Length: 57
Image 1 (cartoon, one colour):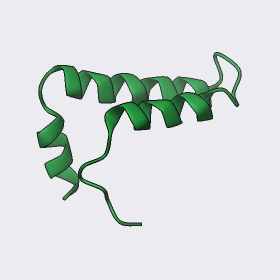
Image 2 (cartoon, rainbow, N blue to C red; image 1 turned 90 degrees about the vertical axis):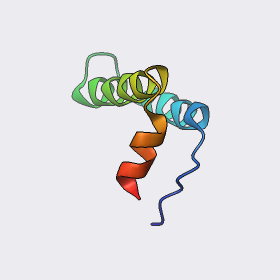
Image 3 (tube, rainbow, N blue to C red; image 1 turned 135 degrees about the horizontal axis):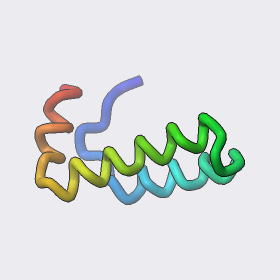
């Protein structure tokens, strides 16, 4: 799968939310999705999104 370096953070968050609806609160899957979402928001809010994108290039 090719990496899209111009991904839309909000779209990714929406997908994570949709997937998260499949799991009960407190399950390992629910926790992993929450951690991934918060990590992505943290990167964006701290102005490091371009560094994050470059990491995957």
